Length: 334
Ligand code: ADP
Ligand code: MG
Image 1 (cartoon, rainbow, N blue to C red):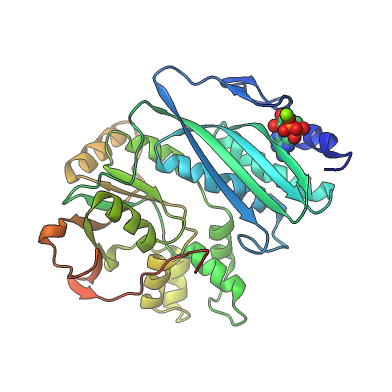
Image 2 (cartoon, rainbow, N blue to C red):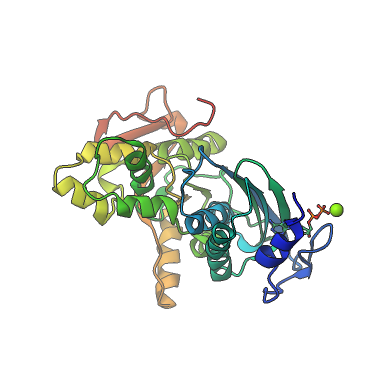
């Protein structure tokens, strides 16, 4: 970038009061050097946010900084990893200092909450784009994956579904699709990575994924990798107070709400499968510690060789009756 590149790095990205967890060399050399504790493996993920594709050009920079890190931490959560470090490649059209300050405030507020240290990156000039790579550690051999869902496992989700997708739809639509769009836009822009839950699920959940592209599409990844079928029970889909209020006031029908919950992206909740027995023992163990499990039971994993579903892996029921729903989620190339 221009002459200001190193000033920007020093002023905004290099923080002297950083946490020093495992960082041998941080920002300022050609690479960061990090110590991985014995008995652990490194979990690495990257997500890019492009202006006009993943966010609106006039997005609040605080929320953009927050979300750029949040979506990466959500991937670490889905593997049961403890978040440790991040790098940030940022392309800026120009140096707008108030914008950068707000971007960093959002990024570091979330980083500090989960003790994630920014250890490197790249700063260039061009159309606004942000790529974060987050790194975490997971006990050797214990990472949660998409591949081991078992027949009769309960399908669980960590929080409300459909709000983020409604927020996006509200922003894109010329007509008013909800009476009060703010709670949905907040859900879209200020997602909470479920890192604590992910770590609690180690040794208990049989598979896990984070919901970025929509419940049915993301569940299909588990079903394909695990070679299973599944049924989701629509009456058990967790709907937020905000959605229920829109339904009560007649702005949204229940079936529209289900459609957002099933196919809408941007939930960033964890979807996991777990045996009934392990779910009960996990709830018990947490309640002994005064904690509760963030978990709604929404369906069941089925044996493909003994499944009521004909020709498809995923079915829906409402009060035990089969229901047809559109299943397509988000795909950048479609
Ligand atoms: P190099 O040319 O060796 O790749 P740079 O001159 O691009 O290194 O960057 C100098 C230092 O600043 C490196 O340690 C790099 O990781 C760090 N850095 C650059 N941009 C960022 C950023 N946006 N956030 C955090 N660290 C950054
Ligand atoms: Mg270099």
